[in-house]
Length: 422
Image 1: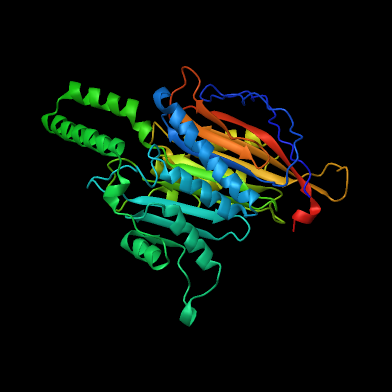
Image 2: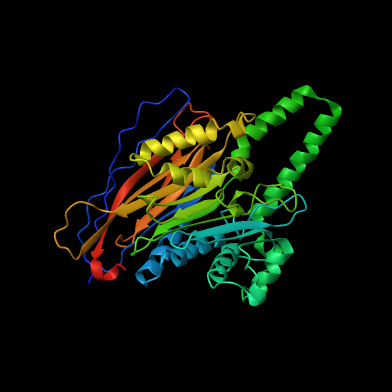
């Protein structure tokens, strides 16, 4: 029998920041819970870093709640972190409101090509697909690649793949029992209308550039600044299970009007997600999932950078500095005047404080999110909570997207009997 899980968010005072930084304090703390229950685990999801309009806020929050519930259901059934994080991603991919799986952005040719990856913090194995068409849930392919790689070498000593792209990824998925889905069925009314609008904008901009109409060109650039961040809503999730294992996953339809064959950060190792259990070198287990402009996230390997930063004592300060120094002010993005991205991060460790009984084990989970985009939608839930909490984080008034950042988060304490922990 596990003891009740106590979950409480603790507000951390924001540090003194340079003028170029912005920060948002965490949400109202919740009270400790004393209800009885058996399951232990925690999930944090995001529905993208970009722009989330007030008119669609309810839908974004709702899909985050469903994703959290799916993951928690798996944890309650005894699943480990990889299975739970996959369940959360499937729910996010199935929503027509997110840019992943169903309803993904269309590329220049009017087709849907998806990227996804998953990482297991226990084994450190990783699976990914890039620019894959005709698969409704690309995270399932990434997860299957991971699980197949964990089985060891193939016949004749061949190394199993961990990253497949395009047609090869599609055919491998079908051969391993993942059902195909016609690309036209993955498009929604929203994604099709967005494609038509974007195509019209492109045609107009090409006329402007050809005609050297300076006034119209300035107007076009202003429009891109206003609307561009709305196209970055990659989805992701991070989980810690009853054994303290962590896992992370990410899925995306990519940038709107991208070139066919383009692979974004959601499929790149160390860029879209990262998960790593505690070891002799790392006192904390960490998990990260990113969103934003894929090229910016790839060039900075932001997921792995944030994971490494979390080994410092102060998680809040460490993430703040990583987002500023490794992303906004990164030398790899020196030519960019608008750096767009967001992350969700968790780190956990066994509690060192005295327990009421030697049979009691406690895991302290610190969870954070940060973004340089106008907004980011997140949801989180422990296995002991009755329902998920959701939040749309926004930059403070006057902050400039791509140059400033917001950061929020909390703390969750997971308590169980030692018999449930290997």
